[in-house]
Length: 167
Image 1: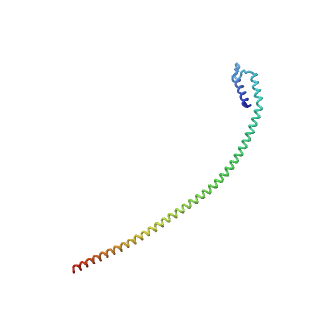
Image 2: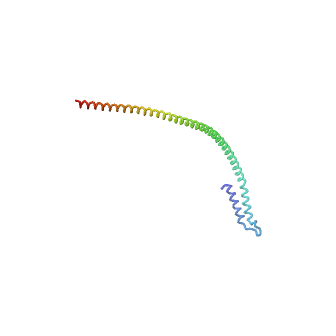
Image 3: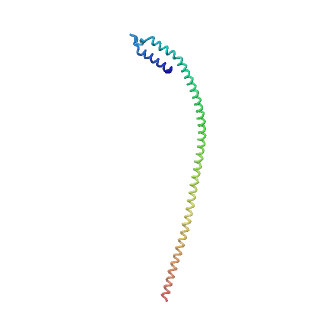
């Protein structure tokens, strides 16, 4: 068992002695314990304390070194985080500029697309109107020719019927 546990165990024994000791009549805070046994325990604690103090000093020095290392590491991490944050801010600025430019390009392309659709629709509408007029003119001509053909056929049939009758 190491000295720390020995000292704690001795203090526990001493505490138990005082806690279980008989009280003095009319003395609420006073008790009776075995003097020799208590002195023996206290001497053992005193003998162990120099070792415990040296160990405590070593632990404090190790703790101070650990804290110093942790502070240096934390400072390095803070600097690294600041550099990364600066880089991210710069990257975000580039991204913001790129997004703004792409939005502008998309808006311009959409506006041009709408204009082209409008012009194409107008062109197609004009072409369809011209085709319709041309077809209407052709239909009128076909109808006129058809009527003329009918009337010539009718005249020819009448003439042939008259010739057939005259013969």
